[in-house]
Image (cartoon, rainbow, N blue to C red; front, side):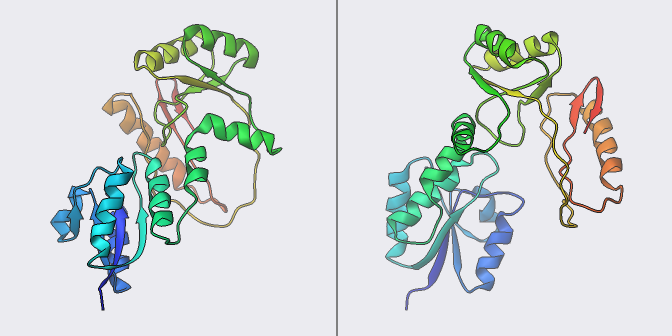
Length: 246
């Protein structure tokens, strides 16, 4: 009988090996497509262009000639589109998996906000701007403060709360110099919620600030995080010259 295999598309340096070891405990042979860091752990890793669906289908078909493919999964800390790719592969090989169309819609934040608003979900005002004139016009409609960020991406990268015109102008220049399209979102207060008693021990904090400033804010964040709360909290801190913002 063919050995059962679990195919993993891409990888994640902090949780990738956890997936691999869990698969091994279940008696599955993990095979990762394009993740060099796993080779050091004696895990089978095959170099494939993971942005090319046809190439992935060909490689999975080749593996299926040798293995009984139990499932296909994937994860990455850079691009959420990997999950849509996994969904397409699962459908092609008639395996359980996520709906790729739904994932692709979620990856487009602006489109997703429109879909949620159309479904009656309360959403903050949001505008899409392709240039500085668009940003100025959109801000006139929304008002200050606003959050100015790229319409795609994850981990709060290149996101900034702009409380005045100077901050808005600075962030606009930064985003447009990098050929980004900007997304303006109304800054709203978050409602308090009763949540289960859980804790989160890690979250990345992207920042363009210098190392010393980042260290100062990291210390403040740790001090804030160890306060004994009775509910789950997602703490984000802005490493800005004005001081710590939680």
